[in-house]
Length: 194
Image (cartoon, rainbow, N blue to C red):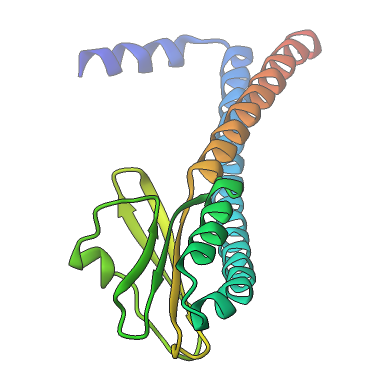
């Protein structure tokens, strides 16, 4: 309590220039902080929607490639197509191919699947379903898409938000640096103008 009273006394005793300078720098920092927060919120929303859109497009492309292999029951071709997809798309953390009874046919990479995980997403025969899963590896956008209205099963994938988080952190660092430089320039400029 005494600490704050000492600070308040120092501010009261300060010259008009110091008070004005402090208020100006404080406003710049406040506006800069608000700008960074708003930018990051908007950026996160746009990037996650794009991640979901790309995930749906990727799954639809995979479904077009694997439909014949499912009908012909060619497990080797199914595995090859799905394995290539997971190797070529770094945001995909897992792929699950389920039959129409929702039994696992293929899972890549080989992970332990719990009943809770298997039932984490809704399997809709008419359209895709997107759920956000909180895992030890961070947030995962889980997308399930029916194959031929669920008659041939479902394809499910998990998309990591790791790259999105890296971009937001990088954006925050750059924004803080810019506002620090602008605050410093404003401070120097205000010293010479007053």
